[in-house]
Image (cartoon, rainbow, N blue to C red; front, side, top):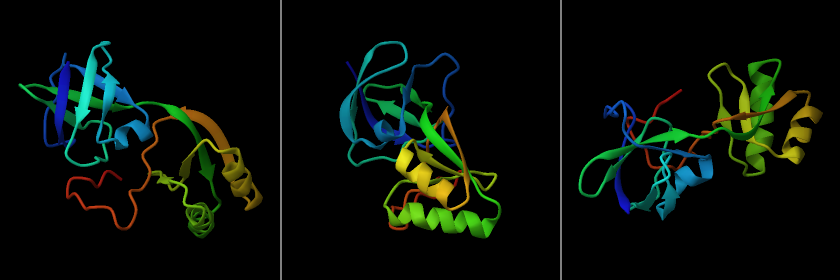
Length: 153
């Protein structure tokens, strides 16, 4: 079984064009250890020293050589649209107050994992919501370990 032992950050490595990959939802990209199945169906043991914050385009170094490309899998999410930056900040505050992970999109929108209660709360605050399938990469939190290569806007 292939064993992944280290993380290669997006932009710091070049994945081989025909190399192996693994497609994972957000929660599975935040694990230190466990059995996974790569996109080619082969078993893969995740055996890292610390809990990573794997993003789309990162790689996993394999014991014995080689690497596996990490892809962010589409998963059920809710995109939230607000009428202004101040409105988005208010909605984001209420979501954060419930300790729910939140992604700030490049266009100023917000994204949460699909949760009917939080979506209803956002709508009650005047936002519009759209349920869809998309990769989810929430903000790491104010006390997360900083990685200089991690600003992915």
